[in-house]
Length: 445
Image 1 (tube, rainbow, N blue to C red):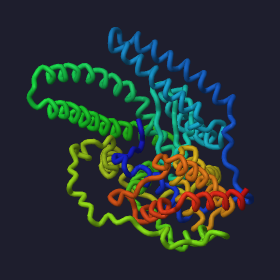
Image 2 (image 1 turned 90 degrees about the vertical axis):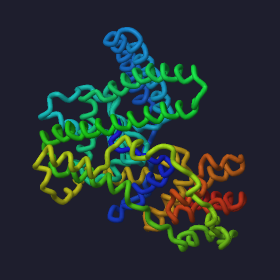
Image 3 (image 1 turned 30 degrees about the horizontal axis):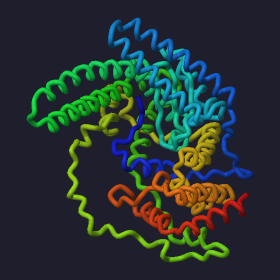
Image 4 (image 1 turned 45 degrees about the vertical axis):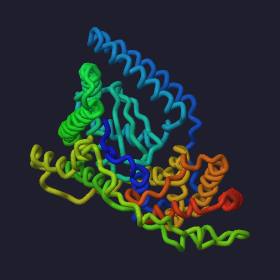
């Protein structure tokens, strides 16, 4: 179950950007050019895969034992299919092993365990190469934390608050309950579908209503689980040596992630980094696509977005916690980060562009690099990433599959700054992209 999740996937890319583009007071300073985390961790990866495979098999056997008949069989199948997909992500290096992040998370879990004997003893920690501030815990105790959390949160206490929330999900076995509910719902829906097939009237609408009702029920149940995980998580958190008010500050911090707009990429920045020897800057590169005649009112949503949400509004979550735990009604300023947290926060920040590159989000990687360069951060480092990302954009443009790696302009869901960037990228010719890639690969190699 996730601590933080997007409702509108159309703005997912922009939300990813916000976590690295709004840190006004967190400039990373290194004595030499930063080197990305080494992912040549074959032995650790192999050991995890072996352990995870055994864990998945044990879950599968336990499912058949605890839930005889079809429910157990279906549950076992779900665990095996999920395990197979997750192992694929591990092999594709979507996670880093033996990193500075592991030690930080393990130390916080150790502090949470001191006065909370009910916490699971077997937790496999994984750090995901994902810039969104998110975490989730699987039924077998595999605990995933995105690098974006280290970058977005402000101190040890806030990270411990997220971990506590996820432990609340694990203690309540929400993942298992979700799967069992899904199995029951599948059986009910199959009966409804058979009934719809037996008649000819309003088949499409009736089928859509089945889907809509199922989605709405799932959203309602997930929102209820989030409230439960908040309560249980805070109980764990408050039993430890963390500042209680930081639990509320964490929720507020994550609310900021979903509401603040990204900073503007200035026109001067384009001219600074794309006026190259042998290729002068062209004003036509900044020409914007005209969407003034498009009427968005022609499209009507078929599903209510509020009913789709898997998480309650954060304001409601805060109100609920303050009602249950009166000590949270007293607010306090955020705790300053420890030296060890500041160190992992800097590393997460520097890994942001490499993470976009790993995810093949080359357009976003260029946009983020330009933002960092605009702020005067690690010029040599981010220029080198411009070269790498532009080289991939060139290959995609040459192979007619650029849409896979570069967004199209979408005025309804993108900031003006990001729209300007996308117009710039799509206005470049193939040779112009090639020249930019070659220049930054050569000068920063």
